[in-house]
Image (cartoon, rainbow, N blue to C red; front, side):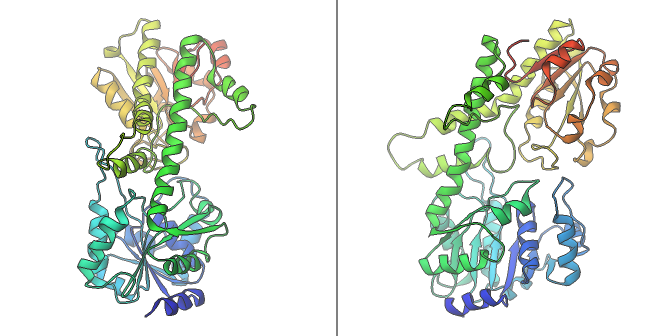
Length: 444
């Protein structure tokens, strides 16, 4: 099949779409293309997850508006089916790859184990004329240096002649998957301009926003740059918050005033940055520049380290509050509220709570955990809090925002509350007699 025939089949929705990896991104993408009328085949390695999805049961526990109903609809209609059988992928005319691309925590270099495994699998079964699109976020140069050679070697096919290749990085986040897929613009980075055009024809079926055509390395740069930009901006907000604590200013009030100035957008400070993207995508960008000569990147790594340090700062605030009431950390029982990285989500990838909990336990505290969306830590929040010496709020879940601090105080051994997401009003807690600390609250 040549590229003109492929484009026609995409326009007529007669092309079969394969999706490799059915995590937060892959599952939502598969559902959207199935809803648009395509036959979609999902490839997933976990049999229990395959069964759930084929039964129309959403494996995500967090709040994902519309996704559960859509999954049930497209599976019952027969447009989406999921398998562990790699050979089924040979039916696909388009293969989307949405696997994890983490960074090694020690070396700060990409760990492409899942990506390499996916490429080997795809290359062993794809037929001539297939379009392969990498949606996973990758370091600039990965398409040219890793993806294309791997597919050519395994398949025995030649890119741009026997098969087609492009990069269209996802732009979604948990809690807004379907909305982001429809409303966020996408960058279609093809190996050739013709491939970019075909990619745009494909995504036009599910994206209502603008589709920008470019080359694959520019697409790689776009995604890593936009997440590095956000990381740097959050780091700036966090540094301002730390200064506010020292000089006696409330960063949240400061932020309101600063953002009244034209073209200013001071981001929200907080207890740390988590998720699959922002903690690692800046390192992907830095990795692409290392070894190329010249001055190595410095601003991006500094911002990354500052944000990584915020959970440790939360622990310092805990120590300050305990000292104020004369309680040793070795004798303290701490309740951490929130284990996911994002409010109203079950996504725990790179959660700042993990770092905080590990550090508190290392310095001698007993830690109990609650999260309404994470299976291991569900239950009645008041029962988790009962009898602890301090509460640490790490995630802005709706459940925690609805808590009445006055009703929490009698449950505590000491009225200590450390707020990493400004869930509670400092003045209200002060009136109730709480020993209170918060990121960027300089009136403690």
